[in-house]
Length: 243
Image 1 (cartoon, one colour):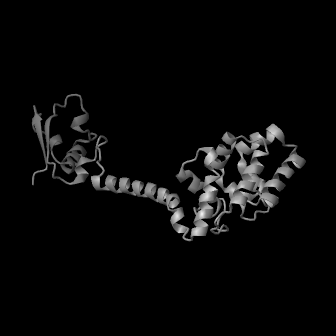
Image 2 (cartoon, one colour):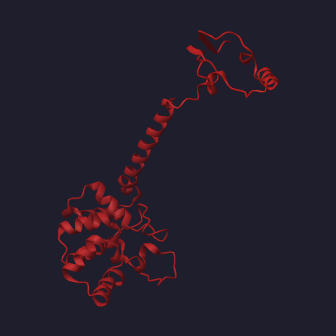
Image 3 (cartoon, one colour):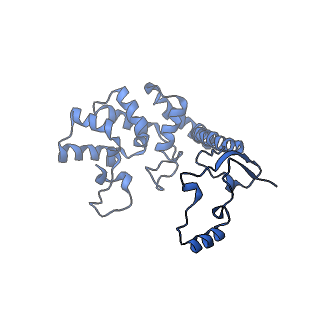
């Protein structure tokens, strides 16, 4: 199959220089002259007038800088489907929390705790997500592997919310804090939240408005329960070294 055709115009008369490379080399050696390509001389009249390319030729013939490639539609469809699937998984991971809770007693406790979050204008989906992350029903890197599923108790959730309000946090502040650190509801009120606030006041003199600003900026400080002092214990999400 003919793949490339070149036409020439005004070709110069045949000469020893127009032969093959080997014959030109021999001829040059006989004359004792340097070998010079006719294309580099000023009197060369060889010109290319056209180029016909067979599109069925091997791909190696078309290595040009302006070649563009089109991604097969099947690949883009697969990527789109994967993205949609991931979004659906995120929704089901929280929307189906109630399906995991089977007993009527546990379901009633869950709904009561969810109702305690209603003053902060969360959607049902957001309420499930907050409680799910706090009590092990939705995976959270904060807990690592230590958090087991636990149906929250209303008195536990209300106790933490009331304590946070006592730190001069408004409902709007609590809304921001819970979105940023929903796991706070699963922390221990006496051993972690209250103890850490006391440490902040005693060791760093952080209290009042300064404490409020700190908690809005870094609410995870409320759940710190270890200080490795530079000797890592692999519990970095709950370590004072991050403070």
